[in-house]
Length: 75
Image (spheres, rainbow, N blue to C red):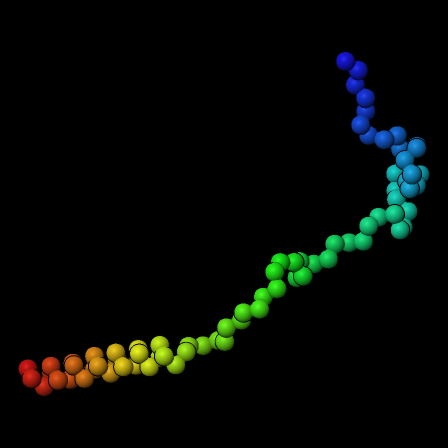
Protein backbone atom coordinates (compact mmCIF):
# COMPACT_ATOMS: atom_id res chain seq x y z
CA UNK A 1 0.00 0.00 0.00
CA UNK A 2 1.39 3.36 -0.99
CA UNK A 3 0.41 6.40 0.99
CA UNK A 4 -0.01 9.83 -0.54
CA UNK A 5 0.00 13.08 1.30
CA UNK A 6 -3.53 14.60 1.14
CA UNK A 7 -2.18 18.11 1.71
CA UNK A 8 -1.42 20.10 -1.45
CA UNK A 9 2.07 21.22 -2.22
CA UNK A 10 2.33 24.80 -0.89
CA UNK A 11 4.56 25.77 -3.81
CA UNK A 12 1.82 24.89 -6.33
CA UNK A 13 -1.29 25.97 -4.38
CA UNK A 14 -2.98 28.93 -6.13
CA UNK A 15 -3.68 32.06 -4.12
CA UNK A 16 -0.93 31.51 -1.59
CA UNK A 17 1.74 34.08 -0.94
CA UNK A 18 5.21 33.21 0.10
CA UNK A 19 5.23 32.09 3.72
CA UNK A 20 1.77 30.52 3.57
CA UNK A 21 -0.32 33.71 3.75
CA UNK A 22 -3.38 34.39 1.64
CA UNK A 23 -3.66 37.65 -0.34
CA UNK A 24 -6.62 39.97 0.30
CA UNK A 25 -9.72 39.02 -1.65
CA UNK A 26 -8.96 35.29 -1.63
CA UNK A 27 -10.80 34.56 1.61
CA UNK A 28 -14.59 34.58 1.87
CA UNK A 29 -16.29 37.37 3.81
CA UNK A 30 -16.95 36.88 7.50
CA UNK A 31 -20.13 35.18 8.59
CA UNK A 32 -23.25 37.18 9.30
CA UNK A 33 -24.68 37.18 12.79
CA UNK A 34 -27.40 34.70 13.74
CA UNK A 35 -30.08 37.38 14.07
CA UNK A 36 -31.43 36.56 10.62
CA UNK A 37 -31.43 32.81 11.20
CA UNK A 38 -34.52 30.84 12.08
CA UNK A 39 -38.18 31.26 11.25
CA UNK A 40 -39.92 34.62 11.13
CA UNK A 41 -41.89 35.25 14.33
CA UNK A 42 -45.37 36.43 13.48
CA UNK A 43 -47.19 35.87 16.79
CA UNK A 44 -46.12 38.17 19.60
CA UNK A 45 -48.74 38.26 22.35
CA UNK A 46 -49.20 41.43 24.36
CA UNK A 47 -47.60 41.70 27.75
CA UNK A 48 -49.53 41.54 30.95
CA UNK A 49 -52.60 39.67 32.08
CA UNK A 50 -55.85 39.41 30.18
CA UNK A 51 -58.99 40.78 31.81
CA UNK A 52 -60.67 37.37 32.21
CA UNK A 53 -58.12 35.74 34.54
CA UNK A 54 -57.77 38.91 36.62
CA UNK A 55 -61.54 39.12 37.12
CA UNK A 56 -61.75 35.39 37.98
CA UNK A 57 -58.95 35.60 40.55
CA UNK A 58 -60.46 38.77 42.04
CA UNK A 59 -63.87 37.09 42.35
CA UNK A 60 -62.33 34.08 44.10
CA UNK A 61 -60.42 36.32 46.53
CA UNK A 62 -63.57 38.35 47.25
CA UNK A 63 -65.62 35.17 47.79
CA UNK A 64 -62.97 33.86 50.18
CA UNK A 65 -62.90 37.13 52.15
CA UNK A 66 -66.70 37.24 52.42
CA UNK A 67 -66.75 33.59 53.55
CA UNK A 68 -64.13 34.25 56.25
CA UNK A 69 -65.98 37.34 57.50
CA UNK A 70 -69.32 35.49 57.68
CA UNK A 71 -67.69 32.51 59.37
CA UNK A 72 -65.99 34.82 61.92
CA UNK A 73 -69.32 36.59 62.64
CA UNK A 74 -71.08 33.29 63.31
CA UNK A 75 -68.43 32.04 65.73
